[in-house]
Length: 218
Image (cartoon, rainbow, N blue to C red; front, side):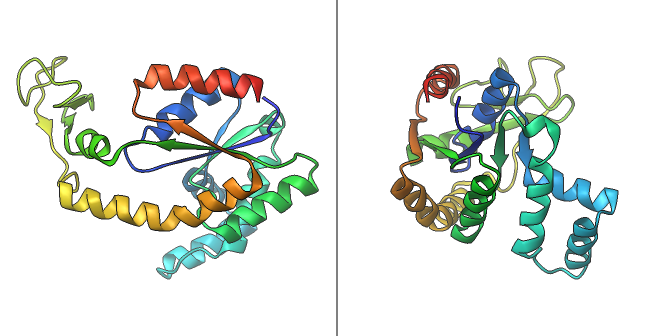
């Protein structure tokens, strides 16, 4: 794997997190979540963390310069030297341009961007069919991985819960918002020649196998 930075894109339900975790495990590189590092910076009371905390407590968005600074601090840490996966970042063209400038200034080249594409009908089935055990947190899907007894966890007999926001109308709105937000980002990376489109309709294990083969040769 030659690219120092990997960026995963994918709509809700596309399996982006699952695939990113598998790639991180295989290559022994960290998965850098902007949500996690933001909370950590606030907890440690770093200068950027304090700046972020002030904005969050005021109910305002954390500005790009603060988020970007926290991301840069994180990838300067030792465990990112061999490579890393950016999770949840960048979300805008301005953030993507920052990542490019930062990597090139450090002599690390452009990122490799993996866009996991899944048919909308399949995404709807994955998300509307999701059920979670109220006791152990085990996740089922009534279409693809149903419990033996309807509404009951196989492991401990706990009641399976259905999230209120896992209804079709809400999910379609989330998918529409995702596509609006990322369409320009996808075109930005396609124009750079760093975008790799991943067939996401397959079994997760098959997708992971193909991804690891591609990254091993990329």
